[in-house]
Length: 458
Image (cartoon, rainbow, N blue to C red; front, side, top):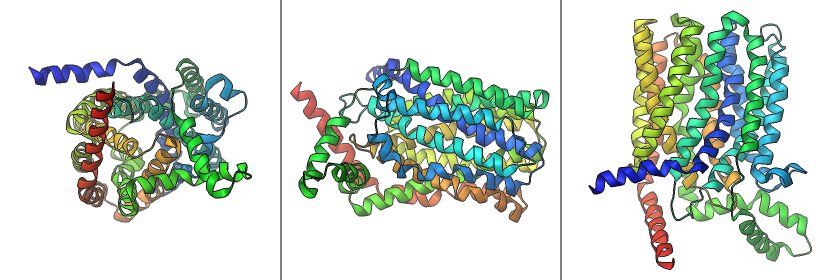
């Protein structure tokens, strides 16, 4: 009876309207990855570019790996006019969405086969706006459900963010691939501009989260002012903005543990990134059509991700974030072997469907745990900067190293072996995670104690 009641409470915890806001905002996070990721890979493949060239084109994603450098500005700078109308988080999100809209229209008029450099520059600007937008979106989610809240909803809010990301990525991607052969890729991108406008409407509809961020930042400024002197307000502001988020992270976790956490974050998603960068060229080379890719990889993949992310987050609520990460990492690695099977069998639609379902389940499960983990490692005062630092490290592995994925396939000249190697890439990160188990148990115990003390004080 207790168990069923517990599951009932878990399901009811998803009825919070703030989770809908996170979903709507999350759609904006996934959308640019269609523009410069899967749809662009399909366009470049149809244009006759080599696998190596497509892999290197993905270097534009490197900005996601360095966005922590300007994350302090997203935390602290108040945009003129927009801040007063929308608040700190939504104002930055709307500005970045506008930039994505403008450059989507510009990229729609290009011919990447004839002018790859110009197309790459436009894609880089979209990636920069998107990476900046992600800083604000992640901070929006963290501010909406802070760790200090009596009822913690890390897995639930992470699930809504992931579902939003995949909705913004998969639905436009599905429409793009099923229509590409009919209307052409240029018109596809003009249509994408309409999606960008819809996402801007979402930002205007949701509400700005309430947070103690400014109060905590003011306290940090007072501490820095004592050291630097009250006569240097600009220096104090810069010191708090640039250095305090990183000092706070290392102070809370200790140097050794902090470095291990950063290494784990860097390595955890590399295998998935190598696979993801080459998935579209692989599907096409094996013999799947644009319509099949759109239907199975995008539409069915989106539906499966929606379902599996909800299920995965519920399981993570029950298992805990760290255990969920360990199980998710192993499952994510194992699912890569399904692609190796396709490489042997060829364009079998039933196997393609099974692979998409299994891959989306393991990816959804591990991603919810990973996002929850990153959130657990951030503080409230500088959530945008600290989350961006951790997320950018994860993106560093996914972007810079994964840029060599096409070259690795060319070197191996064996798709099956390539996917086996991607399955093994997660092992070092899981070893690091296991080494930190005692540290995480201590954190969870402290959080439980704080919750009990809050309950007693009410």
